[in-house]
Length: 184
Length: 325
Image 1: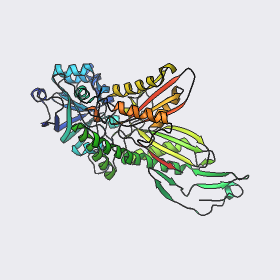
Image 2: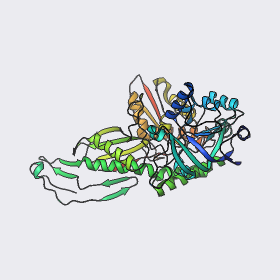
Image 3: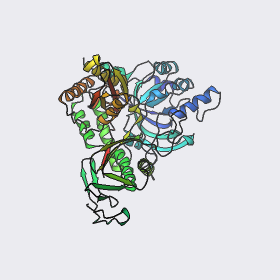
């Protein structure tokens, strides 16, 4: 697997070079958000209001971390299933979001938005939450503290490991994997 | 511990108070100070268990289930690692083993989704619960376990209003009354991602075993990467609509790889396991042959008109702890 290091914010040029199956180590800021936060973000977009962070060039990590134990930056912190954010994702990519991180398949609408707005979808390893937490250096809630684990956190990460699942060309690693490894 | 009951409960004489803890895999026998056996008139032994003992046990199990992945799952990871043909798949299995090790060492949850607290209770008919509401005792254990253990609170009180209860209650509690004077409690925290990929279907009797095979395999294939493979597949066949669903969840409680006691069902499990692992989905859905760690099938009598089949998927964090009080 090719290994690539990227630091956020991401540019069109950076994501256009990415191809499915590549392993990427992310550095810099990631914003967390899952079901409830996405609903609020898209409601704000519909009302023409300002978002708690500018999605341009940013990466959203679909996660609801477990609470931090005393002395820890964050609790266990693995990806949640992404399809639940599919109804909201295209609008965020349209505003310049460059990548989302989760696990599991995306809808045709999201895959189309990735091509249209030059974005990618990364997978982190679902369930490797205790290990993933080690690459998170700082964490603070920047919006919706009332949502608890679902609040939007700003994470600063170092070498956060992800794999490119959907690229700007419409590739899909999940489909490729099945093509290669399925046995008739 | 054997204490004799004499006269009314108020004058109950307690014998020697013993406290012994012994481990049988993930099951421990625990006779707390607050449990006592009474022999009532006519010779029936009644064991009394205080709700505080139940709360304490549930609290511990919520945390232990989330921190310590069972040896059966770790063994299945190893086996998968050895036979996996995809390098990415191998790497993922290695990462999952490392993750389990970190969770155990640091006593942090292996997955941030610390689950819905699903609690299975087998209440011996010669047990008397004292000290309050039995279900509230379980919920209090969940509340304390999730709060004190820094586990994520993932439950909303109203499915449409969706406001978090803040303490991971209510638990889902399944109770069975069984002969004897023991109280068995199993805590099985269940993640939402894999639960969402589960399915149930009322097949026609004419669909037979082929219909069952197709439905199970289709469910796993359509779930693809979403339920965090490698998965454990619980299948319930028979009963009514809700019974099939419950059987499929009970199937997930079995030690991984333990076969059904019915030879034809054990054969079905083996067939499904092979077919699912031919799908190519692999670890995390990135391709490979380790899609399922185990397939467990439970059956029950069915109506002459029905063949219900339920498929309950579990991610690789196949968590459950058990106590016998």
